[in-house]
Length: 613
View 1 (tube, one colour):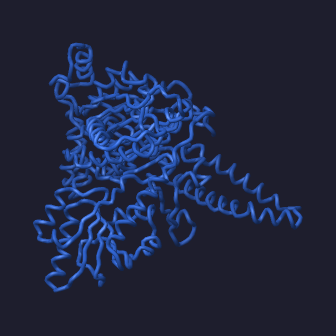
View 2 (view 1 turned 30 degrees about the vertical axis):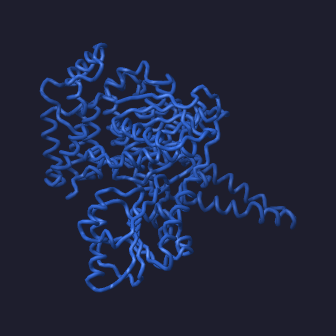
View 3 (view 1 turned 120 degrees about the horizontal axis):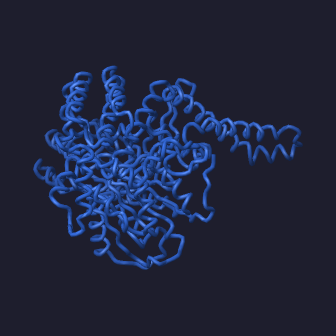
């Protein structure tokens, strides 16, 4: 079960400091409105807020009642109202309606708006337009980062992906840069910063501006190196089915802010139960990164060990029993409860994921990744669409086919699109437009077969005199070059070799040995080479905007040099987190993953559905 690991791994910095800072700042802002007040919280802030300051903490600071923002007239009778919101125009307009309704009714109240993580000028403009700018006080709660575990931090900004990569709205770039600046000020200075992707480059430049504007303090660094990566550098990985335990739990039960709600089918009662999933849960911590095929074996062994620990009670004298009850029994009961939950969750996953359909699905994915039996794969996808198995799953398979094959042949594209729209509705036409814009589902142009495209790219790569991308290459920017990348980076291990999932030999284990995630392979290669030298062809295939910048004292041999902060802009999957943990164990690194949000295939594609669907 256990991966072979170097024993000299460095200690991670204490990320709980981020929570304490966020809580202290929120309390300070609430105290700026002295006396009793009602607090209106935007719905997607409720879970993150609960991880920072629970209800009792808020009550201690004179918050009387808590309400969820629902965009309708309010029922609060308090004469002081505080709104905790994201900087969204729709919510600001609703607040204006509330204030104007109170004015019309002759009701006098004090209003405070706290924007998090920052306010945007457009929000102030709306307040001014609606004539309420002078009636409210405005503040910012710089809540950029929520630690989900000792090595995962989230900005909890799922809209970052659609806004930045589809709409071209770069307003969150500065937010990401400010989050990086906060980490730099607490755990830096960073020795080296690597990055790939247009958004990563902009984030780096915005962060550098903030560093230059602030005062520099000499500190002992706790994080040595930083890697920034855009989600659109690697769309293949989030489109693949997750088969590590934590990824499967997220796919089936949806992990939200590090917390999962198990329904009656898992709890064996008529109630649901919220469970925190992190390294404090000893059972979960040992199986979270395991391929699902290994999980039951581990859980049954754990159950036997637990029974042995309980059986120690037999033959104890009174003093020994007293010690056992005071020191061990509570821990054993807690472990027993968690073990029962994870066994039930695993059984629930088994029922959903070991059916014939799922095995066929995985086989199809593996064939697409390897480039074999493409016609059979297309037939499987057609059947999936026509049986209306799942709207999102069908879309995922279409995108995986397109990205691995560098676009669909015109006749296949037209046929599959027509079948999809017939099965799931013509209102998905705009969704197809969104997918095409991102290069996720495209039609090959005449003369642009895979071989022709790759020869064009090869010609550009060999043109050493080209100081920047030519127009011809830029026109291919939204095309995938998966086959060429796969060969150059050995992303798809040879299928004739037996892959033992109990003793993984590389990061491909997270996809049953079929595929090494491109994002993690790039990170591994850059760290190995200490830069992008030798990866020129790879970066041009990705059209990457890559960079490597040396910062403070890169020759330092401290433990901090082996702690690498990886920032995913546009979302990161639990499979990628598992792959980086494996890589860290193999190489003696520790990775801290910072992401704009946790993602998976469903979340990624739901973000691209047309809003009217």
